[in-house]
Length: 530
Image (tube, rainbow, N blue to C red):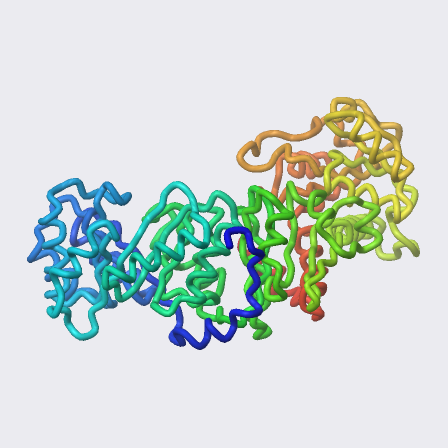
């Protein structure tokens, strides 16, 4: 059971047939005083959360009766009361009886839910037997901070939790790989009891985002990025506004970006806004992927309809494809993968289209009102820094347009390998500063030099930039890199990495949906957020 590929196709009926009400969004309150928690409750309501989790173990001076009475009665939202002990990852270190007394008191004072740990749940539930208010529910939780067990072991854990008399089952495991989430999805989608399934850590993010697709009872969203109550927890605001959490249903199609790192990617912002604007039942998420093959083998049903692909997977992903666009094949790197209805994977490279068209438009601006026919790159000396996936895209794209390509890379061998493929010249990055056989050259940086956090670096000296008429930087965090600032100061036309990002995004959107991209919306969003 542990390594079965996870397909969603057979699960539609059970996920809609089980729990029909939507997944709740719960915001943990981490204030250290009752007054702070009250402010946080109001914020949670304003953001659009459904439930607040009162974390009693965060309160510095907790006075059970008055504090609980105040918090439960004043809360503008339904309340879930948790008093997490140190032995289950919380902050409470005191007497166990007092802790459980506080949870029983929360129930008496009108809390909607309490969360009690599996370890003590049997005795706790026996102690409140016959005393539970009508709409009150006990969540029995189990937290594993080491890994995500096999599907069989998780199934057994669910049975143990149910046996304690739980109204709601909560299982939180830790993701060592993004495919761990599939085992939790299997549990929530097939469970006959309301179930909260969370895979902690950045590799577990989709377990939180896609809770509504797989019938999870509730998911957690923090008030602020700095106030998360468990590793990998997104903010409530991001769940609602960035990932369109309320629009996700069991039949929602899932797209995403695979990379490592991937959290910085702005793609979810663009695609989710675009999907929402045309009413497409789809979501686009961040996938932190270590092993590409394992990822595609695990998430293999048509519901996982495709993805964008970024560093370091643009070349590794090639081996997993059933079909590769001829130009992408020559480049040897892909950035756009579409799953056909029959389950096969087709790959494209939209990077080169995005970057080359942006550079061409920049050169046309230089050539005045009456640009010559054909590509303005024809005959230009085109220097590409870096020979990775993006470097290949630009070298290949420029050569295709008739440019004379020079590839510079940290290691000469890699530069030569690419230069030979495109009929160009090779050199090391160290040699670029002294290379200027002619004026008016074009420079394209695809290395990570100058990218956050090392924003004060540049791949070549300012002095050497005067020989270029146009400089393009594929980096878009930050948008205005040191390279581009210095190029602007030397009088070159500059083309931002965001431009390549936007334009390759247009192409990906078209490949994913068969529809033209909402270009103005993409541009507005990039302008606002990049």
